[in-house]
Image 1 (cartoon, helix red, strand yellow):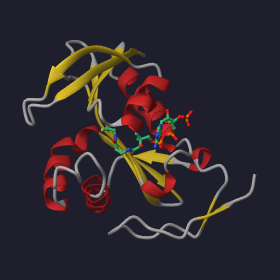
Image 2 (cartoon, rainbow, N blue to C red):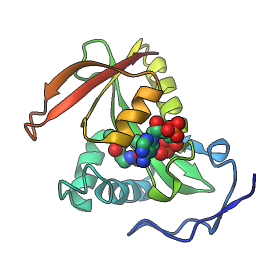
Image 3 (tube, rainbow, N blue to C red):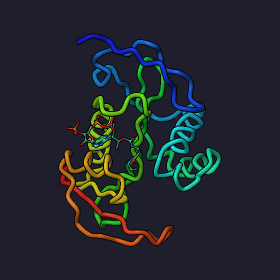
Image 4 (spheres, helix red, strand yellow):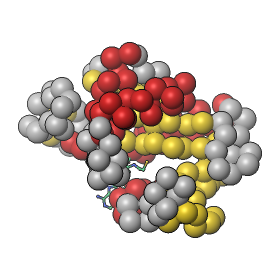
Length: 175
Ligand SMILES: CC(C)(COP(=O)(O)OP(=O)(O)OC[C@H]1O[C@@H](n2cnc3c(N)ncnc32)[C@H](O)[C@@H]1OP(=O)(O)O)[C@@H](O)C(=O)NCCC(=O)NCCS
């Protein structure tokens, strides 16, 4: 495989190196977000649907993510944050850990980075001694629904979001 040229940066985020390694997934490192990373992931979330479509600002994203900070892990490629995931011990399914957010930078989607973040999240949930991981997703978010199905999540209920009044799929998988 050859390295790929990537010339476009997601708005507001530092550009990634022009040449990305062919094996992006294998080169990722995971860790807790630093203060600086918090601003990066807030920009990432605010610039990405479903939050972008809701008109969420970077300041609002930062506020929401600050509450989630103890549960957040960032993925880094050569020091650049390229995505994040949040795993809480408790969520809408009693006894199950909860994946609230997973986001990959646009330029790096569909290259296995989401899978690598998810695998990290699954191991975090196992370390919490949980046996199940649950999440909620907008059924209209095709890429995310497909991603979760591919990784073994099945729909256990359809719920109404308290915030938006819209339908959400409640999905889960064993760990
Ligand atoms: C969902 C998300 C994290 C997936 O990350 P990713 O790095 O693209 O995922 P991967 O490369 O590991 O996995 C690819 C798989 O995801 C699904 N997928 C990802 N993008 C897709 C797209 N545009 N259309 C259809 N399926 C898609 C498919 O199942 C695909 O598998 P396939 O190639 O065999 O069809 C990413 O699309 C994202 O950041 N979305 C915006 C934020 C979001 O909606 N998060 C979920 C709700 S919190």
